[in-house]
Length: 389
Ligand code: LCS
Image (cartoon, rainbow, N blue to C red; front, side, top):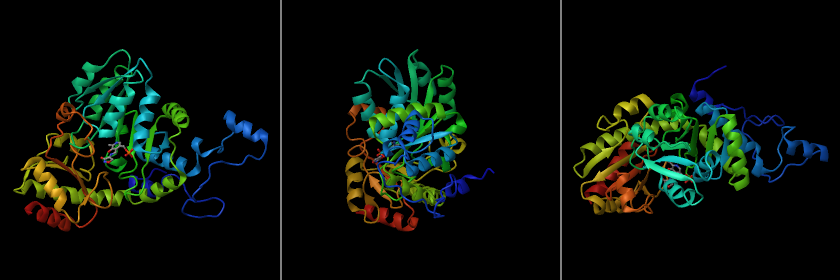
């Protein structure tokens, strides 16, 4: 029976414990699994028998989490990783090797930018950065050895959008895979698979968890791709802990209701910020003033919980705002129940060169607000008080 996504978010992959009937999945906090005899151990290592061996290679909690995200995103299989950065590295290393080429959008999370620029280039994988919101730039960057196009939409932190279908059409014409980092929206608000993306990754630290208590990642795709990614993951050893997988499965149950509230609060606050005398410009996909509003409406079911905005007084005004808020919390990360505020140019994207920041339109005065699920009026009163100080 096929259910709608709100139902799959709660039920999805069956989790009732067959031995005890426990509705909530037990935590299999174990590093290893006992074989009945030597023959069985050998069969499991050869892949002739299903079953667990060792938690780095697979664990009931991490497997169920990965499978559940795969179901929600519409793919066959998935793997759970120890962080979102491990998920990004996993995708790149499972698709490209020395001598290959990848295309990465110019606006991505700072950590992804550093990984690509510092480490991926170092191991001999060529990288071209493009502005994939102009898909023709992806077409121009394609080479015979291109293996992957990696994009975030909406992009961290500017909320620039990328037309997934347009990028997929260009990449697939040359047999190149497309991976979408869907961290900002989750499968509840955007399913890149519906637009042809081959791979989706998440920093599960964010909305998948929703509670700010885990660092984790997930990669989902075809069985064939996940088999390759699994090999990389087990070799590098960036597997997720069973307890973190359990926390994520718990957090995930409320994804739909949390995202509904994030959408509602963020839209209300974005509209209000647009009218505020201290604010120069607001970026939020579901604002009519967003340059890609039409694309947002076509590709997304909601605007999500993240807003970026420019204060009229630039960096100094932004800094003063962050020092004066009381309810909004001054911290990086996003996707939590709590509203978090941060300054990309000096925090999440601080290691980028001035030229790279300019290329990504991360201005000195840009403030990023991850709107939580509190009462929106309380958040606006807090921001208003801080802006007036
Ligand atoms: N992808 C995106 C879109 C992200 O926002 C982040 C982290 C990552 C990948 C990496 O995930 P992690 O390893 O942290 O789980 N973004 C952060 C941010 O904006 N502030 O702090 C972390």
